Length: 72
Image (cartoon, rainbow, N blue to C red; front, top):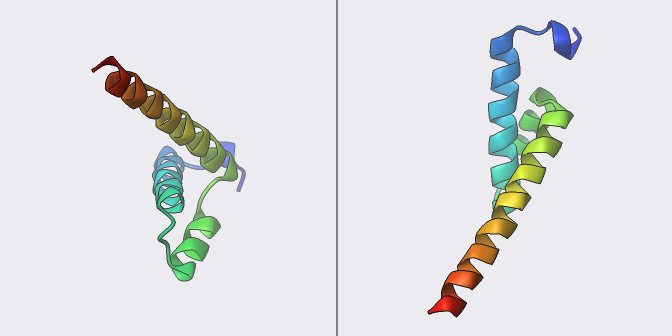
């Protein structure tokens, strides 16, 4: 089944799983079985997009934290 033909709830579930997958990956604490289960059920494009946004938010928050600390 093509990704465009999947129902909306399946795509949403895949996107939510992608967010969880990236969050666990950034923390570095994930069981191998859980990781393999998630990889089988997520869309790789979602994982790349969520990963990019997560890293961007992390960098922006670090810049904000540094500016806040230096300003005091």
